[in-house]
Image (cartoon, rainbow, N blue to C red; front, side, top):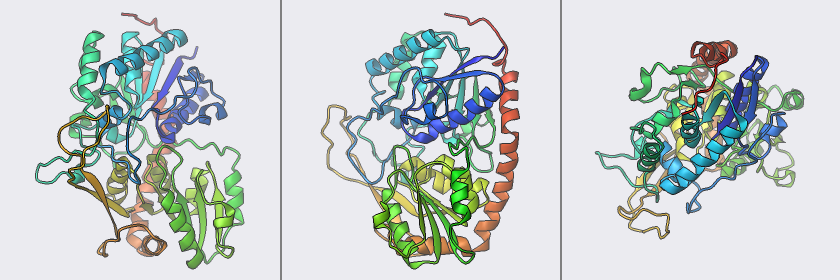
Length: 453
């Protein structure tokens, strides 16, 4: 008899839901029942044929100014941005999650960065599995933007107070252990990092935690019929440089990248696959440019087809490019994506992060009832450049074209991407068996009576 799993993906970004769907496919194939507490994307879960119990969760961000770069300094700050720095708001969400768990009566709760579901499951005596990126397991408030810290001076980049004190207070009120770090909430009874250690690693505090395991990439692709692959079969010529540009389909999309890519395709010998729900209309594409517009899905087919993968730095797209053994160019529009570009791509030698940011002190206060008063909020400044090149103030088609030429022509990037691709493909092949084996070893696949507090 299969077990019942209830998924709680984080409320912002399609990648969180996609990795839950990839895990759901493994569990479903093994005879287990999977349901979702909510679908933050609006339609991905139901399109996959899985039930959604709580409807669509609308992202709730509080008072963030509109910018072309979203500075989120770590998990603590991500939770603060949806109001979890306030104990009353946090407790309300925990109670909503508890009510849903009591109604659904799962054997196991699965979280993808949703900490309230963990507290709720603990209160209800339900075991917890966490699906994670390695950077979910960090220490301190600034670990998604460590490059902005200079000589011990930590700039204030967010208007919100930390959320850790609220988590500690609510955990104490619920009779649960208080977390020392926000990331402690995401370990669960078992944590599955959807990657390999050669590409990303958690903070030292979590390296030896016996509950945390790598399981290889968990990529969800809704293009199950291979539609994009068929379109690509007849697209471009043998002399073209095949460039796959994905600007992101979640909460943050680097839309300027789409315009720069179309401009580059008009002058370069490219066959450009441009994937975005916010892509230019066909009328905005030059008539002689070889550009194929695509909205969503076909991630594996696109990466396999391309010579170079260009993306906003989302975890899934970066891993898809590396899985295919292709050099990756990251053009981030938020801090965690820049971190992916710096660590998963540049540090591994498999590509470049074209945009680097820093912090510039400012005395301009932010006036809002959600704002923590005190140290002035610094502004984020960007530098766009190639290795050894002069920095530019913004992205343009000339710089993007030069970056693609470098990644396509310099053999070291391709060699390193090829080596990482072989490692990732082996891990991906073993992922279903490894996931089920770890769940079984942890006793999470065995029928057992739930213990309520």
